[in-house]
Image 1 (spheres, helix red, strand yellow):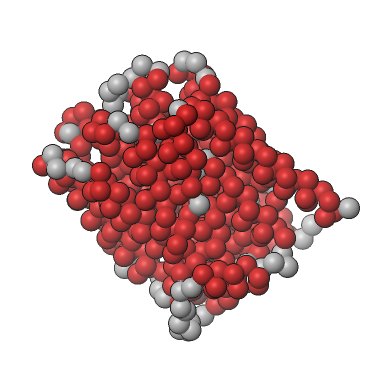
Image 2 (image 1 turned 135 degrees about the horizontal axis):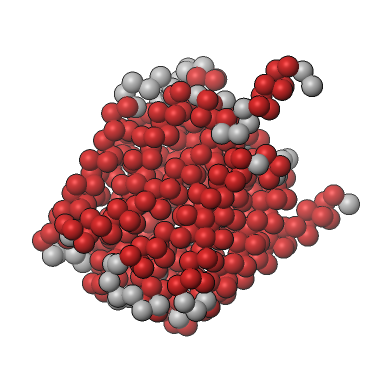
Length: 416
């Protein structure tokens, strides 16, 4: 082994943290994602207490994720063309606006169902605007060598915020009430927004910063991009896998978490609700740390599919669990396998995508991984209003397992 290769191998573990600018970004993004988590915890609880409607919980998921379904390819094209720092700042502004509006509605007691849907749409638009530029700017900072590490570390940051957010959000709701807590929450978005003014990366430095041609939004564009990457079966596999896991289960079970907590005897935003809400995030943090620490576990497309199948099986069992200990354990395990397959899939897609189309391919992947979560609002939430949220989640998770097994079978046939 050559000396450069040996040195590269030596810094594989948590390699992205060797970049100073990435360390700064990582810490400030963590603050912003914690603010998002606090907002979710507070808003989901108030929606549940105000309306007691699984259907509204399902619609909340739909209204939040539809922007990803409709606009991900377009915002990926924007990330290919424009300074990614400015796109992220625009998204941060929308998030601050949403928190301010939630706070005002909570304080005045004027919350209506359409308010909740509209604000979740604003939150969804902020997310879809920020997602491709975040991925491009991180790639710009660390390069392809440490991209997979950066994706896992970003996931640690995101899920750690989901772990801390419920605890902080629950404490703030108990101490201040949801309205004041969300008004104060706006301050957590500011550090990253301001830091981006001095950050030297645009998302395009590795390709030069020349202006990109303008892109028009159309569904045909998504089909053209899919045709461009069809020669790389791993990209197609990861897009299908991400779409199946998102459409059938996604994050809809988080929006229904007050209902699951209620079934376990918790009717207040207490420590038990916060623990249940946080367990999946805790598992994701544990899983990401394990993947970063043990290089042999950093697999390829087949590993991602197997982990997705196991995740689906665990999620199918979760609603049937009796008692908090079993429920929390299953959610932690689900978090471990979830971060495994999502981080592998995202890294593969971003590394294998043609450089001149990277933003748009990332946008197409986000359409599948994030946009199709709108479907889980139907498969788990709306269907749950008919047959119960426990059975709807179990059936939806079984569908994920079947799709994963189908991908494994198709891959085996291709290798023959």
